[in-house]
Length: 64
Image (cartoon, rainbow, N blue to C red):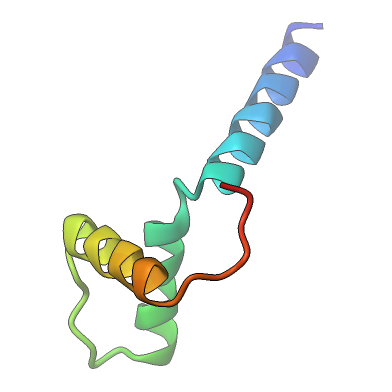
C-alpha cells in the first residue's frame, strides 16, 4: 500500500512538473549535449530569460 501511494505521488509530481515546464531546462541541456556538443550550455537563468523573450516576441496559442 505504501509503495503504491509513493508511486502515485511520484507520478502526480512528474505530471505537474511536465505541465509547468520545470524539466524543460534539463531536457534542453540533454538535447544540446546530444545534438550540439560544441555549443556552450547557458545557465538556467539565461535559458529562461531567452525562452520568455522568445515567447513574448513570437506569441503562440497557449493556455495562459
